[in-house]
Length: 404
Image 1 (cartoon, one colour):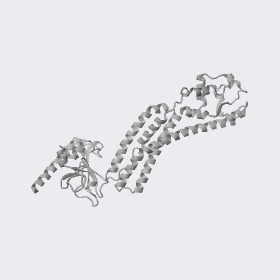
Image 2 (cartoon, rainbow, N blue to C red):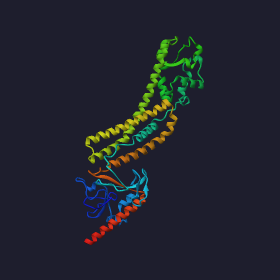
Image 3 (cartoon, rainbow, N blue to C red):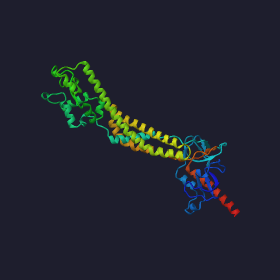
Image 4 (tube, helix red, strand yellow):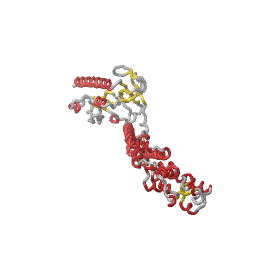
C-alpha cells in the first residue's frame, strides 16, 4: 500500500468513515495516477482517523489483515519482505496488493497486468446441487419385484394363465417379471412397469391350444398389444410377428427411459437456471456499472451464463436417471443424493462469491500494473504494516507540528 495524503471524497474501505482531506491514509494507488482515474475508485484505508482512535483502533488496514482476507498463492519462490525468510513457490502466503507504474520489480514482489475479471466458475457445483435436489424431489425408484404393489404383483402371478391353470407362486411371478420386463424399465420402478404393460396381454409364442405344456413357460410368453393377441386367436406367432413384438417393446422401453430422463433433466435445468440467475444478473450488472460491458453485452452474457448452467444441470439430471435405469445405480444414488445437494450448494455459493467479488473490483488503471508484496505469515504482514503505518504517522504528525 502507498502512504498518501488524503484528498476530498475518499472513504476507508474497512470502517467506511470519510477520510479527512489532508490526513494520512494508505492507498492502492501511488501519488501520481493516470488521468481519468479517481483515488476513490480503489481501496483506501485511514491511518490515525480521529473516529477510529476514539474507539481504540490504530489502522483499519491492520484490522482487515486480522480477518485473513489477504491470503494468496505465491507465483514463485520469494523472500518475506518483513523478515527475509524464503517462501516456497505456489504456497499460501499473506499478500499486500496495490497498483504501480511499470518498473523493475524488487525481490519479494510480483506484478500482474490483471485484466477483466475471469468468467463464471462453479458450473459443476451448480449442476451437482440441481441434480441432487431433483433426485430428492423425484425420489429414486425401487426396481425389485417385492417393491411393486400387491395388485401389480398379482398381475404377474396371473399373466398368461387361464382360470383353469391357477396362478404362479410369488417366486414364479418374480421370475416371470424379471424375464419379461426390460431391465431399464424395471429399474425405473412401478410407474414405468405399469406403463409398459398397460393395454398388453401376456401372449404365447406357441399358443396354449397347440402347446399347452408351455403355457407357464417364461420363454414362451411376451407382452403384446391386447388387440393383436385376440385377433390371432389360437394360432402360433409367426417369426415376423415375434420380431415385431420385440421391436415394439424395445422402442417402448426406450421411450419410457428417455421420457423419464427428459423429465429429470428439465427439472434439474430449472433448478440450475434459478440458482444461476441472480448471480449472473448481479455479476454482469457490476461489469456494466464498471464500464467493462455495454448494457446489451451484459444482458446477453447474463442470459448465456444462465442458459449454460441450466443446460449443464439438465445434463446431470438426465445422467442420474440414465444411471438409475441402465446401470441399476438407484441404491448408490439414493444414498449420496442427500449429500450432493448441500455440498453442491456450498461449492456453488463459494464460487459465486468469488465471481461477485472479482466483478466488484475495479480494473487496473490504464498504464499501471498490479503489484504484490508477499509475507511468510499474516503475523509478519501485520508487523510490517504496523511499523510502516506508525512510522508514517509519526513523520506526518512531526511535519504537521513543525508547520503549526
